[in-house]
Length: 289
Image (cartoon, rainbow, N blue to C red; front, side, top):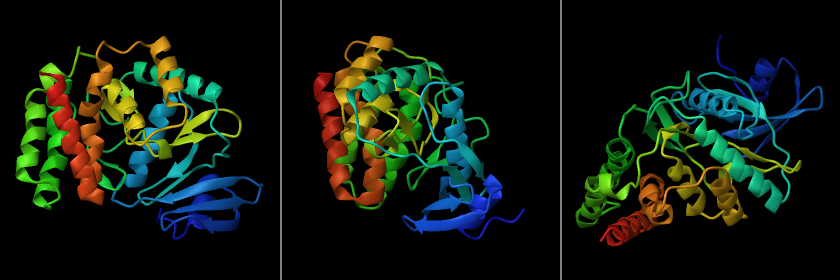
């Protein structure tokens, strides 16, 4: 079936209801009101397969029966249609519940580090950046090869990051077996868990949107949540720890796990994030002695 030509047409196609109103929120996102009074979110994928990758990720997260995500009404090569989340103020109780739910999501596991969601493509996205889901066995080797080094090379090639600075990040990659802490099984990750993808619902429950879901290390989700700040973050982490204690030394590994999103942002947004990535790498090296 041909792809829809507008947000309203996509909403009608995937919900089976007529659209009575449409409000564009950005060039790729719109709210569409249906004839039964519901409002749905309609997103146009910004890369080949992006909409289907996001839909597969949402379904995989929902399948864990842990964190809440908006229901997916349908997707194709261009469009994703989901429920709209009515938002409210952040609350400490919702934060604690979210921490416990996130621990349960991670415990649901994945077949391997780098494993894509069932039905999700190998060539996926994190935000606007391509992200390749290639399964691997050992987290340090997989993380270096498929999460850090590809974006480091792109940043150097673009002139965003200097070769001498790249050497510090490459050294972290070489030392990852020692820096990574105790071995952990693959966790089911949201994969792009920054504050903007955490919606505080008016019903008192957190919902997650825009995943770059894959099998990974659970500390990566928590490090990304800390990267740009999040309301009640310490309450989230405390509740997570009560449900699933993190390995000793986890706080000292935050910078290692932040290298991936920082380098992605350096590729997309420039020099400021490159400087933060270098600072995180140097701090990780200092902490390791």
